[in-house]
Length: 279
Image (cartoon, rainbow, N blue to C red; front, side):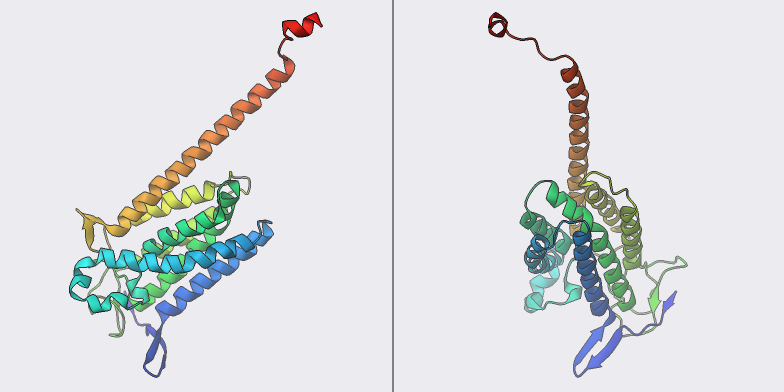
């Protein structure tokens, strides 16, 4: 499949504005806008979320850069001058998600409120990721391993960020976008009565598993044995999602047990002690 789209939207002097940058910003802005609107509709308020976001965005960018550099440490070891060059291609999505997500959650506080806020915004985060991945696809950034499959992509423009020219490769960024869209729709269709934290748990486990599987077609270097650094972060998210899900199941069972015991206690009140009988 030949992609003939020009990856450059417009050139302003020496600056070339690429589709990747435009769609990444659109995805981020749309995710924030939709999340804040839904928080208002759910009567959760936006003040605490905006405060958490003000901390999460810069921390997420720094962690995204750190994880990228750590993953490509051998390259930056011999090209140390590029350490401080901040561009979208030099940021790790999973580094930003994990770092920024942890900071966002920490600033929200603890308890059911945090879980409800995270449940509310997670579908829109996935939508923003999908839009950014589509920008990568148009730009040629994040192409996967060479492939002979019918949907393997190559680019007509030499201005793309593809690792080489004329070699059909797995559209790994498109795979990721499709997973994110499917998860976004699935989570949005979940019943509103779902326990707080259910959407978050599903997103962590499902999207983490998808990243683990997509490691087989991505070009990212291995970090630990045959595992990529982003795969390790994804594995951590799967474990975290499993813990959240297990906690929800435990809380539901405990609440169910308490509800069964309360009618029995009301029907058979405890006997009075001897002192009360004597009185």
